[in-house]
Image 1 (cartoon, rainbow, N blue to C red):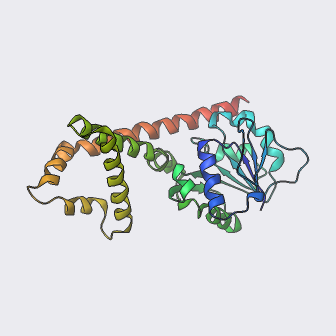
Image 2 (image 1 turned 45 degrees about the vertical axis):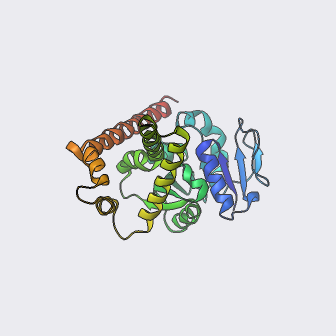
Image 3 (image 1 turned 180 degrees about the vertical axis):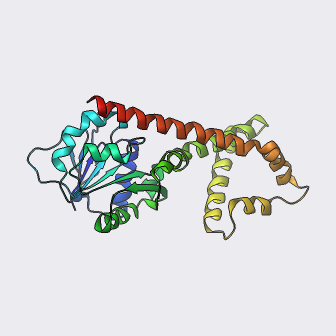
Length: 269
């Protein structure tokens, strides 16, 4: 399989790492990125798209969404009737991608997060792939984490906020836990270690437990006990739930704004 990856920043790099760790041959990859100083051993790295080569089997769009209009002319020659295009361009909808890469066999929007590097990413998928295109997409997502096909593209904005941006919110929560413990007297380095270890263990247990996270929280909290005292603060007036609603609302709306911006840019081209 010939996989051309246009742009290999943080997210694209995480996906490449996950694919290589999952056993895909490095020789299958050509990375086109003028800003990347080096690539994993065996991966072909180019500063500009090659000229005169046959279309790739898979093209990964890994540059910034606002660069679509500028990058498209270099990408198009490498897309043929059998090419699967995978786009991680947040906010760029399928209609815009299809208008830009009309000759592609199939186009799929992919929204992973940085945990793709270790095969632990939730991955939202939406596109027009069927049959072999869908099978190829599933096979490529398997080394990166858990793929979830969406029935409605409108859900992509919210899923991007939840699964794509979500790790940053979790990291902020871990940091806030440690900051709180340090403010109450625990040495900061110790607070950092304990908060991180606690979240890691809790997440792993939640992943294998037959109970949902809400039930697990209930099981940890004995009536009148230490945990219940803390949960009473988080649960008062649904303050934590409302904070998460506001957080996801802001991220979702920004993704929708980026979609509109990308469409305007392509229309002005």
